[in-house]
Length: 237
Image (spheres, rainbow, N blue to C red):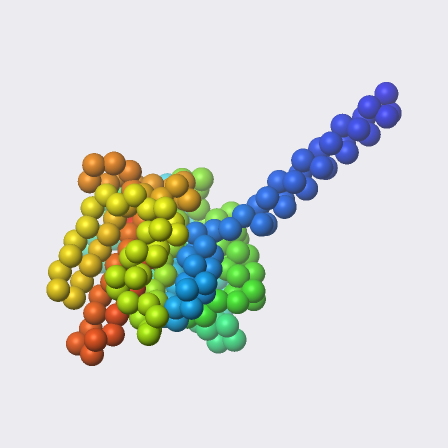
């Protein structure tokens, strides 16, 4: 009986360890995008991950009371209008140059949805950055968000001698196995929306589900900024 009991415990430990290893080694979309950019030797301009969710008012009230505990050393601001109360907590980590911003909008209408978002952004990526990113997003997910949280990853790159707009679209569509669904093409601006099997999160597209956008914009000096977002680009591009 004791041997059987010990075997059950041992099996449980093995399952937990396997789950932990899987969670700790699973590559997130922003990491995959950065790895692809590094493989192609494209200079990074900025990366950003944004998490968005809706909360009930009781939970939102608790968060507002504890913002200083959730975001120590952050600048915290409260704005009130006739329509809503807006809470903002922002912080720039000088050592790593990572910026984080939390926003919560509480409508004054009794049945209005409470909107929250958390953004973490930087201009460089390293093992230290990755560790901080994983730790922070894990912490805020546990404390602030529900299981329905939506996560948006975005990477901006600068053109160089090797990478131009045409090569950018061809290479990343090929590497990510993108099925093109829709596109916009102007003189200095191109956007392609599509679907890739690499990522599970999707949003409704024009005719089917989509989970990736690629954009390229040329400035007056002939420089091109190339942006990839999943499931959609929610930053300026």
